[in-house]
Image (cartoon, rainbow, N blue to C red; front, side):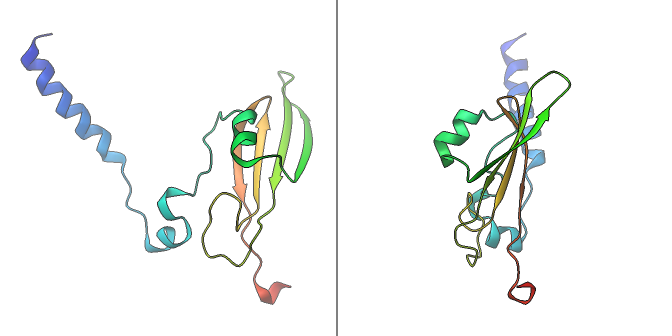
Amino acid sequence: MSRSALLCLIPALLLCGCSEIKTPTPGEVLTHPLGTAAPFSRGTLKAQVLQDWGKPDVVIPHGADELGNVREEWIYYGRIQSLPIDYEYVSRTKHLFFEGNNLTRWSTEEPSSPEQK
């Protein structure tokens, strides 16, 4: 490939990469500052979660998948439910789901309102 063609290709690739940037809503900015909504990505190893967050409060075994990988749910209880932001598991309880050694998905429990208690 010629140098001039390469110089034209690089800006085009960079511009294509910017097309998926999503502007957060005001509510997302208030509850998830600095992109704290997703604590980990799919495939994160258990060792990395343990290093970042420490031992989970509860580990629930869910058997094994069709390949024999052990399925587990790790629960980290929110420590201060009254905080309006969602950072790690400080204010919201997090459920992390593993198959084998890899994180497959996670969920966040919304804090219960005072009327529900």
